[in-house]
Image 1 (cartoon, rainbow over the protein chains, first blue to last red):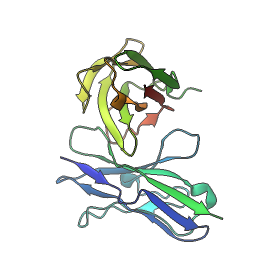
Image 2: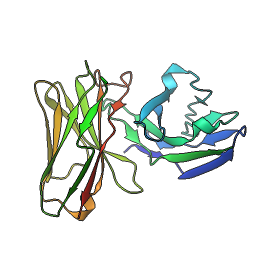
Image 3: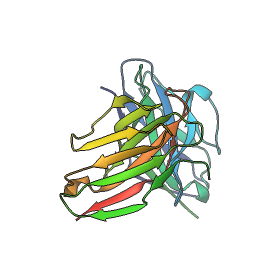
Length: 109
Length: 114
């Protein structure tokens, strides 16, 4: 069975500091991985997906199949990055995203 | 706003009752997903519909049922409600069903069972 683990419920950093939100997955095949974000009083929305290899709002995420990880990184955190971040996995032919429990990122001024 | 619309925003009801949550997908999206988010839990997949037909089922209780209508809106019916059913229920939609079709979420319906 597929599973997504986000080990940190809360991550607190200061503005300008690097940030890394951890995501580990368990799945034996080739997964599709995503990061979704929910800003305060807004709906959950897609931030980025690994197949696009894109950088959105300064965030990047690299799929590491050896470590089964898809950590989200940003070199210099901004206050507006404060939000709830969810890692999600799609596997095989199900096409149903499995979500982690989420990590709350707080960026202090 | 042509995004995913969920009604009502809040619902307070008593144990044993039945409620219906409604979801209108984003214009052009054929697939609808229902997720449950309880306290300290991630998003738990309940059920998916595609163009009116049930496509996938997750951890949905037998007391819960859903359907997608010809106009593509969907309803999630929760019956014989228990205190543990209190949660945030999200609806999401996508154009098709696949990894290249990201989910677009509604704002959720917060259900409180007293």
